[in-house]
Image 1 (cartoon, rainbow, N blue to C red):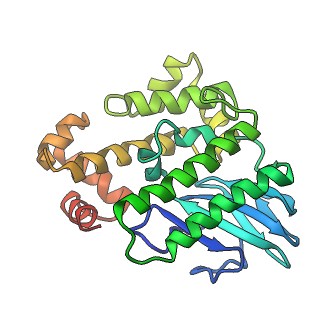
Image 2 (cartoon, rainbow, N blue to C red):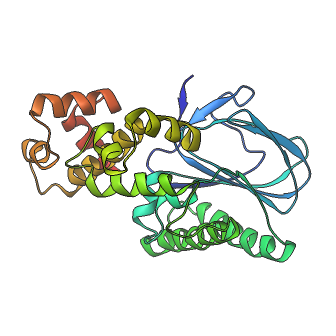
Length: 271
């Protein structure tokens, strides 16, 4: 199954009405590499998230994570879809992407709470229609998103130290902290006192993907940060990220992105 990416690669945050024209075939299940927050204002429909069907209901919020299988049938539903890349969490600290992970994708809120969050989403939508946003206005939209995400975490009875399970939060936090030095599943299973097979099983249950893929996603994100900073040469970045050779460093980036390190760096700096 092909991975669907955001249609505007230079944007971390996109918001559309529920009935927007998708750039991909939305009539069949698909997997995308970004988050979706779906706010249903009225009407009905249904969706499949990792093959679990849920009805679209007014005053409800739905969260779809990167890597999940998704199919949305809008029918008469009206509302907004907020789409964003994992990289946006660099701009909305202290929230981290794994705070959103939960076994439940459907969140019911009171009409008053929904109205408040929907107004924030509409504010993001109004800003997104301006093609010449100032840097401050861009960060204003990020601030609106931050409030929405904090509220979703609260509504899900989560806190910054609990997600789908204690292991999930611990694993993702360990990866974020140690990915430069530790790139093997066995490294993290040892720190968590789990077998590699058990860690793999738990990750698949919680996130739908393997722990190795989560490690590689975080590794690539850290490499991108160093490439954009431009303070280090490619050889120095390879050393900083503890690759045993520049050839393996280049091979990792080529496999992950289809680009050489130089090509990826040029693309990132042109955004």
